[in-house]
Length: 459
Image (cartoon, rainbow, N blue to C red; front, side, top):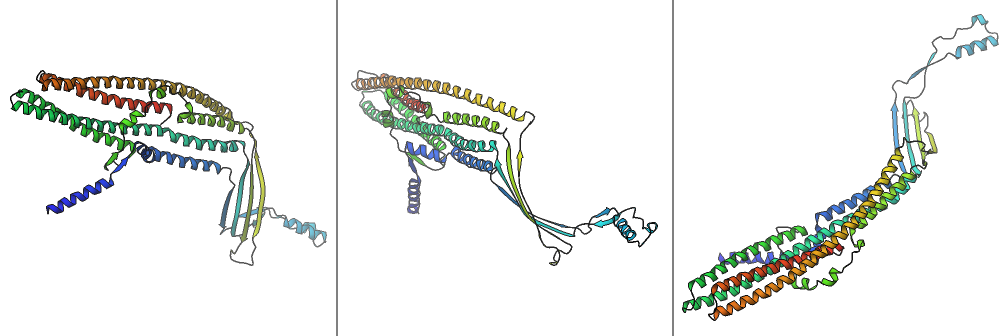
């Protein structure tokens, strides 16, 4: 039974390891871009834009409609006609001297009832309508191409945030794992020191208090190691979230913190000049500006006449007995024509729209200027934060080296019997604090570099 349980456990472990995926930083960013909810929304927006473009194009595409109409009249409408038959008959009889004028039949005063039409009426026909000329429509076609480009460029805007968020989460995992390795090293060193101190105490050359202090420090380090383990788990969860990776599936990263730090060129990064064309927001604003200009042009074209052509072709069947082939045959009706509409006065509607379109164009120009100023400020602040982070790294590195030297010296003094355990404990705490400060500074430097790259449009 125990063998079966062990085999099952090993099988599950192997399956879990096989299912686990490992990502480099570039792979994690690509995965995030491909699977993010925003990317899916962007794809839907592009599809919607294509639908809107096709909808607008349909205005200028010729349209054909077919219709079949059938009408049955159980009682054909009756019309009253003036009595023009009786006077004609009277005149003929009088002209041929068949009767005297006094013998003429008086005409019916109420007229004669008459029915026109047939009981069954069937019409089948086709109608063609085509837009021949409309200035605003043809300008609108050009605007639709710009609209597609605008939607595509808007889809690129969230990519900067996705890249930045994934990269920061990836770096957080690297830092947490580096911190874990550092803690494990400190625990191992402290365990060795504790064993040596216990041996010295058992030989009567150390106090029990020295052993207790070391055991307390070891316990504190183990507590910190547990916190770091949970921090690593939280960092992985954040990375999964930013990548839109399934939160309940395992994941591993493949990255070298030292290699990422070595890639940072302080002089090159600090001297990098802003190129606004790298920022996708500028392309969106400029495309919006072109669209606003196109809208003004479209409204101007609306003052031109529009011409619509049409053609109709139909067959009509009029019979009292619908299925009697000896009755009336099919009759053909057809016509071709055009309709010209000339705008004369629209109640100032187009003038008001033109005014609003020009205002929108002016607003776009202001937004472009504000964006340029905002990005310039963003880059300047990012450079300052980057330089400050680098200076903090250098300072904490010196402090770490100094704390390490002090710790090493106090250890030697204590082993030689010329130092106290209090000095060792104090040096130990200062070393751990310097290590933590240096880890935080390294992370802040990498985050500052990410923010600077984002501001420069280099992500």
